[in-house]
View 1 (cartoon, rainbow, N blue to C red):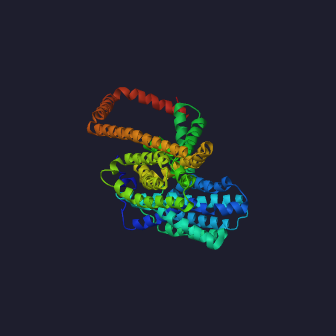
View 2: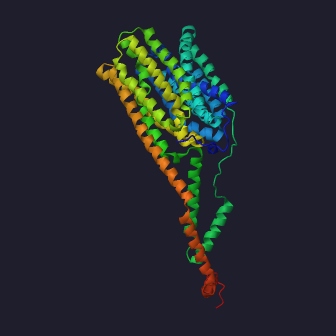
View 3: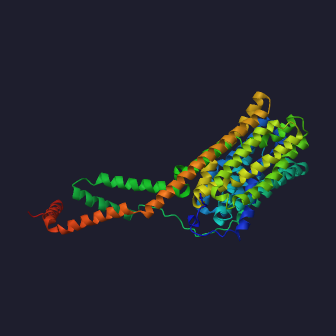
Length: 509
């Protein structure tokens, strides 16, 4: 499968220039979107003591935030299609800041659910999708590298926000920290300001049935009905309703392209990713608790996440460079499938790590595999559907992934509570991801074969258009015979004219 052609957008992306400033802004927005829910967990212990609530109740804050971030994907896509990436990201940054500043004055956990979970989470949703979409408008040949650099903002932000949150909490308390975090999240507005629009923005044509068009349609239907000797009311209403229905469907598809559900490659990607996310985030959530469970001290356990983040930071842009090579990019879907299966294999081998050295090795390989998957997560989708349809595709994918992202960690926690051991959680996550990678590899092989077959058939039709020419020649010969036999058909024409005059009431015979 070759990369999408430039005509997909109607212009040639510059593949550089101001695009690198866009990548920098995207790395900030993507970094906040992916990292903030993880870094926010530092305040859980204090909030749990202040509001006298259980750990499961306080954990719902990040669950609601993540669900809103992914669930808001379609809304974000619709807004980007309507207004562009820049105003959507700026508005999302304002929502993030408002949500965190409001959280500083909350007096109950329910208010925190609304301010942090829903308002800030929706603001992050308006930052994530537009940041990924705008890269596809600026880059084509170097798009995998650009995506890898933008996605590298997540581990960079994780290494920064985690110690910063601890510093803010130690010096200003949780309320003061929330106020400062609200101001920091306003930097998303600065990142959005870098997203300068590109390309000729041509508004889609809206098929409308105006009053004049309805009158013309009514006259046309009336004439046809008079010639056929049938009533005029029923066919006219049917045609107007049909036109209205088509206009409504086209108006919906104008903002969110539901025809993607007929796209073979998109459906393969969607099913594989929904399955993958059942085991994608749980190992990160439970890595530090697992280290403590086997007797490792708190600081060493926390350092495992730092190792993972550092390796992840290097792996993402490196994966983008490899994916952009002439050997990998034409078959990038296979590389993505391998990355998912490699990630799952790391989790399957994790229970064999009995000491701290083993967990450090696991964290290194996990960070490498995690970075590989994240770097190509959106690039492979854009490779399948093209840059023009990517806006709708990413919105539809994120809403489908929302459910499995919510279910993954709770299922892992249930296994830990049931068996009293973390190894079953890692085995579950590993098995699910290996299954997802295998599914994507097999189905992408099938998709490549079908695309090659369809391309071969298309070229064969272009090279041998004989059947079409024969049919046209048959029509021309029929028309010639009809013209040659014109005098024989003349009485019939006169009889038809007599019938029309009789219908109009002007026949004098």
